[in-house]
Length: 244
Image (tube, rainbow, N blue to C red):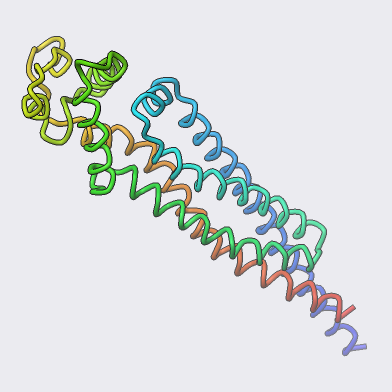
């Protein structure tokens, strides 16, 4: 009688631990699913932002979009895997939970790659970003007085973000014997903008980048925690089934 009571107590303890782990894993995956979809929507908003969309097409600079696509793919994979893991926890399916672990390992590295590339091409300290944009804007300035589309988009960007020329500011116009345009000056104070467009556009992109990179890095950290509880749940499920 005493042995049976002890065995029942051990089984009840296993059930309680399994259910607690199930609840945590299910809720964590649902939260990650919702955050992943929200971050994916931010990517969609950036991709189809009308001003930025026009700039990208007109200046023929797709690097930021390409970097963002890695984050978008990672968010889709995270959302699908979170759904799989949540269902595996709810149904107590060890096969689904182990499958989600394998997929989570792959998605972790995709997400980390997304963090790296979006930071390389979306923060003000990025030398790669500044150099690439410097080449883009100098090419546009060179065509300033022979290509109306080039002058129009440069004027629009300079007025919108408050910048002038490429990396060397107004000197980029003077060096190629172009008149410094009025859009290089503040419309109210009349003062010439202090920074070139590569640096200013990098500042302008940084809030988007910090959001995407921050959420993606949060997913990488959560992956480690969820992996631990997924492994724990698979073991508890096996122990409960063996004990019954």
